[in-house]
Length: 103
Image (tube, rainbow, N blue to C red; front, top):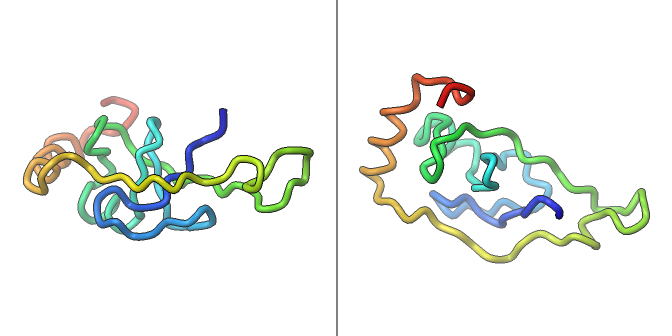
């Protein structure tokens, strides 16, 4: 199963197309822009508490048969966090000083 390429930052709703260099994901594929991850979330996923990594860019052209953005297209379902801004801030503050591998 291919990584779900979500189309937007789940916090600020910025568009994050498949080739976005500033897309960040957690282990559950929650997707946020680099600015939100760095300045508002402090590398703490508001959904699971994990850290973020740069989302890989799926090849547009199939260099191997059946393996490309054409064959596994990006999702068009936009998502938003279900927590209020103050809840997200408190959650990030409580966990930001614990490295992701220790959370």
